[in-house]
Length: 303
Image 1 (tube, rainbow, N blue to C red):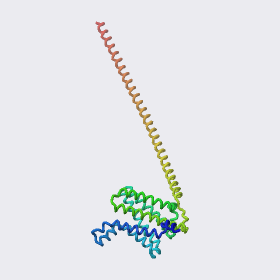
Image 2 (cartoon, rainbow, N blue to C red):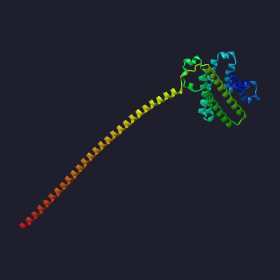
Image 3 (cartoon, rainbow, N blue to C red):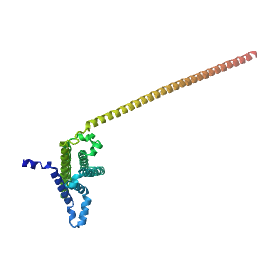
Image 4 (tube, helix red, strand yellow):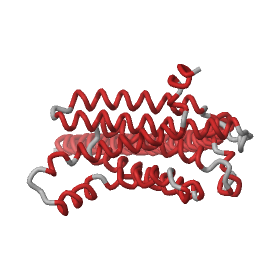
């Protein structure tokens, strides 16, 4: 029995929170190890606050859980923690835009998953969950094990990336401590969600991805229908325009043909008339010439 208890130390929320506090303290100490040399107390404190603000705020949260006031106002502390990870998610997203890399993308995904995990766990069994009908959120379909396992896998991948890219010993140690912190934080959320499930607190959640997929499919079908109708109308209008243009071109062609034929006919008639006139003129000239010659002959005969 004692052996089983030792194996399941990670199932104790108290042990997990203690480990997180120790890890955060070690992270702060290691990150400020070089600041201690040649610096006074005030500069060391200022450096700790400026470089480890997020860790200090999270440390306040977990230390608060150890106190009576923290346990009494547990839900308010959870809102405080979610706000911290909301800020982290926004800043990590901006970092991805500013400096896109595998490390920044992994950091952003980890922060977002932690935020969603916290949001869909810590708000359960509260008035916020019921008033805002958070039970309809599709993310409730994701199981507790899936959330935790996904988070651990991303943390391991991120750790390997940091180990490959880090050449300084202090950076290596901080990367390991950060990976341990996120893993224990995921375990902390996992245990609280498991507690809610065992107590059957707000477990009848209606939201699921099937409904979301159905709604998205219906919207896509509606959009597809609209696009199809618009396309058919456009094609119909284009065909009508082409037909009208073709008819107009045919009419223009017929008009040009008729006018050409008229012009050719008139030209032919003009040529024919001109030819007849020339022919008549030639005939007249010939007749006149013959009469002149005949007259001359008559005159000579008289003589």
